[in-house]
Length: 146
Image (cartoon, rainbow, N blue to C red; front, side, top):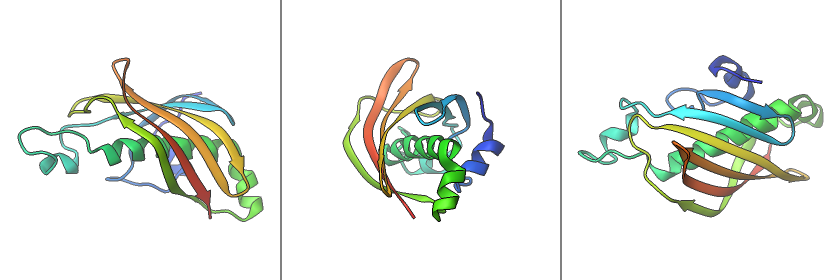
């Protein structure tokens, strides 16, 4: 199943200029998601990171992976979460976070996130980001339901 930006906005609260998931390519409820983000040369952070040699900040790449995880989780369990009294999830931790290559203006990043487990209010994901089939980042992500 594919999802566009309007459907993504129904699943997570992020909005421009801090929405870093453009579309969902594939989603398997309760298991995994493949999404994409095209980093246009006009992104706000390129003006200062770094002039003359712009790259996407690593925190933005990890945020994109976390947002894809949020789309997966809310798509999979949104109704259940509302019944349990939860409105949202906040990023709680990043473990084993690694950056393998820079992401530059014009790169289309593929975000692949798997749901590892849920323990009470804590959700654990495994994520990676790639450009043209080459892994650029990976992380284990945890979020807390609120």
